Length: 335
Image (cartoon, rainbow, N blue to C red):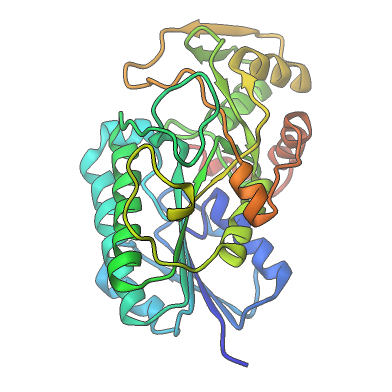
């Protein structure tokens, strides 16, 4: 049987570490290589396994990539990124180096080593704001350096697929949360809300509270990611997409729950689950935030990958709170 060696870039981050745990549980590989610089991830998110190899360094560093690919990589999950919108607004050069230059160097390595498939994790932030649900053919609007480099990477993935014959798939994540995702200045709303609630502080909503998001638990994100790698058709697209375009001639799958939640509902639920009596405060929306409503049409993933998010928001928040209260939660990682 041919050797299967999986590379997970960004493997110590919130999604990456949970993906690694699931892959270890499935045990369908000979070696699993994790490449991360731990800028936003943490090695203690990982569990020890004799088939896991950790390569520490930057995705845009030639020597680091060479060390990783010396392990005879066959499949790549590319999750490494400079996260996310606010960080990219404050540090656009760092964002471009990691998310832009990093993808080009990685793709060149994938072609050089004739890998069997690469999965790229993109984001729902690339979509143009609309009231309805986003499908893979929805219009694009890029409002932050993060969304720009996410779409840039999608274009590079598709170029290497079409012109270099590199088998690839793209997943666009929607509002993921769960264990491994620490609170902090540049982190997501749910861990920051949970941390404030645990400390009996008011939850700060940037906007009116009527904004909506499809909050997707990490286990559903991971299941959709693995399904995209294993079940998507390995094809070469005819051309890159413009709107409108044929959804069957792109490499993209939306991964998220089709249940949407208003921000005020989220804050009220978290306060209820934690017993936080400090309430909610409202401040003006950030000037770069042009996405008041976000919803996902995941019908393509359901139809072609047999994927459907199943974890409710309340259950997911409860599981995340259990991690917050466990020995695995390291307060030193809060930034």
